[in-house]
Length: 142
Image 1 (tube, rainbow, N blue to C red):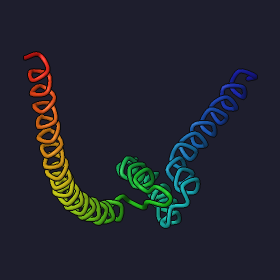
Image 2 (tube, rainbow, N blue to C red):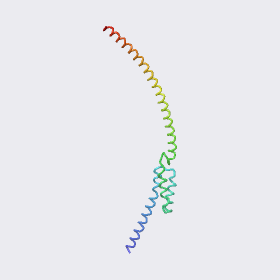
Image 3 (cartoon, one colour):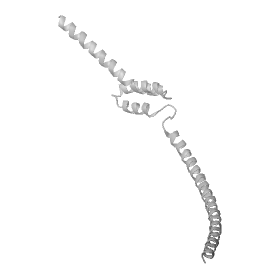
Image 4 (tube, rainbow, N blue to C red):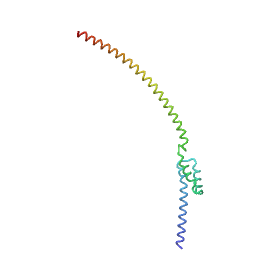
């Protein structure tokens, strides 16, 4: 007789533990939604309870739904739109910098041309002076 009551008590305790574990497991997506400040927390919570009665068919979808949302980003669609704007801004910046490089290249070529012209004049003057000195030295030797 004692064993009958013990078995019955054990059966009830194990059943309660299993029911509590099932409820706890089905609340995991809801807890994730609360932690992420998900805008559909209540819907995920109700979906968890509904999943208990649908033989856990929708529970994986609740998990995915709860994990897709990220605070500050949302579901990620807004970030991709902002990314397009960022790419456009970067392309504009690259074009502006290419124009600046082209302008600087032109200025540099002008400066190089001026320097070459000045150097050629200096070389011509030095060549003339050198020829005069050579002529003087030859005149002194004769």
